[in-house]
Length: 252
Image (cartoon, rainbow, N blue to C red; front, side, top):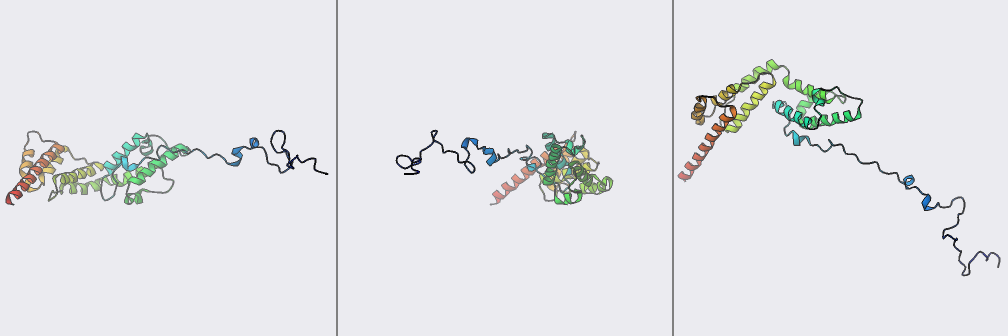
């Protein structure tokens, strides 16, 4: 019968000698070896994580700079130390000129500026920020001016505050912290307090329970430093507290 010569014995279409389907011209499927997988699915770009991306500013600068609390000296010291660890101090101290056209420099500057944002209160940023194009060095200088500007007029008020501190009912440690914080504020405006004056001011307005200890410290042949004077008063505080507990137990 006509047309039956192309069929096999069992009526099936015979396979080609190499086992593949014969080419059919236009519209035929290309061989698997001719397909480039990159023409179908482009490779994903490699993921690059900048080394500063995982740095937490709070792990290195655990304080927040605020206008109401004059802790600029402490904050600035911690922040400078952090930048020094990563070789980025030039972004805040201006030791090298900015390279605004260098993408790597700009990226590092953005990281340092972000660290400042994360460790400074809004009350400071509202006064120091000037726009999107502000460099880290410009922001750092603006913050510095906020806390070190008008030095003489600020020194008058800070000096009055320093000499007006009294212990009252606070602990020796809290009292000493307030005293030390006041001296740091005075140093920020160029009026550092000598160690001997700091110790005498600490002894002058302690609670009356510590009067005898304060007199012993003041009458020492060599006036101890602030830390030693604090330790002596703190030891007296512990003894007084222990005596109060013993008295209470005896009364019961």
